[in-house]
Every structure is written in structure tokens, then in C-alpha cells.
Length: 327
Image (cartoon, rainbow, N blue to C red):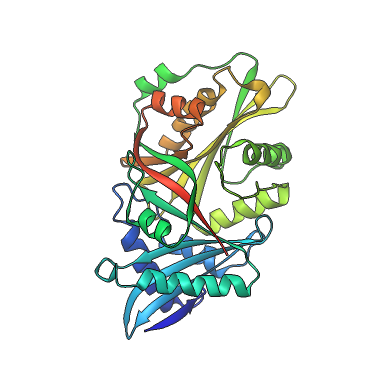
């Protein structure tokens, strides 16, 4: 057996790497993984905030397991984020530990002091084979989010019931690229959300967004074949008070994502979360030509957003847990 380095530039190697990773993710009841081109662009291209690469444990022509690594370049430069995937027939044979040892060796050589990893777990018990492995290898659970899903499309009758415009605000919408007129305020709102969102005991630093970083993210998403619908609420003074973003990819049109939803503190308590979500549903669903599942993740302590999601009809299907290993 040997460790193979993966950088996304060799199409044949990356396909073997991705195929194993994708097969493991498909074991989830509601998988939320990227398509192969989305993943390849993320790994092969250069980005200002993250460098991605991978490892594979290979025996001859057989791929036993893989590790996807995200090396953070702006915030959290002490950390590398790991995703492990082991083919079903090779689990409990030391493959995961062999890959983890290789990751730890490389993390230490790069001066990183923390390995973080996200584990999927049962919605009620919070346990899984992944969490058991993490605990056995010395990782500590630091944060838990509830994975909720909603089947789309919602009927127009249901959207009409939910639609409750809020006086004193106007609604604006755009698709994919954030307009120059609003990009500075939007970047500021993204930074405010990063500071505000519950993260439990995780040691991650919040992202600091700039207009340039937003534009880079837009360009990456478009190159990956992903799309994004954005709806914002603007107050009487012309300030961006709330936003929500939903989208997906052209390769997996039945798998959609509720990305960020944020209401500034001084505007909370006015149902602005719902006021931006409903028109965004209409925008998103106008392009749907088949049933789809919308995914979202929120900390259980984020009770206002959980309440909004439950009102919309989201239901819990799993937990997503953040684990950390100090080196």
C-alpha cells in the first residue's frame, strides 16, 4: 500500500479520488456533496483563502480510502481541515488511521497545530462510525449543527401564506454576481454573520470579508457551475438590513442549498428572515424543472433560525459535528 498525493490536476487520479469520496457521501440519506467538476476546480485552482489537496491510500489499482485537506490561508492559518472517506469493504482495517497519521505528519511539517474535521451523525443520538473514530483518535467534539431538509417546490398557495412583507423595507434580488452598488455592504454583512453565528467551542476565527473576496467567491462559484439566488432587505436609510442566499449546481439540480441567512441585530424581531426567504424561494423555484431537496445547517442554539425553518417545513435528518485534534 502507498500514499498517493492528489492535487486535482491529473484528471485520471482525481476521478479515482473523487469517485471513492462521492460513494461514501452517497451513503447519507440526504447526501450534500459537490459534483466532480465543482470539487476539481476547488482543488486544482489557486484561491486567496484556501489551498486544497488530497491523499489516497492505494493498493495496486485499488483505492482504499482518501483524505481531502483544506489549508486555510487568511484566517485559521494554524489549522488544516480534514475529510476522511474509507471504502465500505476496507473499514475497520486501519485505513482511516493510516491516512490520519499521514495528515498529521504533513500538518506538523507545515507548522499547523490543529486538525479539524466534520462528522455526520444521527439526528437524535449524535453518534456514528465517524464520531466513534474521531473520539478514539483523540479528537474532541466542539460544535454541533442540525442538518435540515425541505422538499421543493413549495406551492404558490403555501408561499402566499408565508409571504409577509415588512413595512419600511424594500426587497432587492440578484443572481450569481453581487452588484457593485451593494457589494461593500454585502461584504460587511457577511463579516457580521461570521462573527454572530454560533460556533460552540470551535477555535475557528471568523472570516473577514471584503468586496474583493466576495468577487473572488462569485467567480469561483460560476467556474464550478454553481448558481446563487440572493435576496436582501434594504431599510429606509439605504442600509442592507438582511439577506439570504440559496443555490446549487447545474450538475446536481435536485440538490439545493440554503446558504447564509442573516438579519442585523438592530433589525431583528420584525420577521425579516422570512421576508427575504419567501421571495428567494420564488426566484429559486422559477428555474426548477424537477423536484429538489433544499439543505440547510444551523446550530440548535440558533433558535430563531430553527423556528423560521420549521415554519417553512424543514425537518431534521442528521447532525453535522465539528471535531478538533490539537497537535
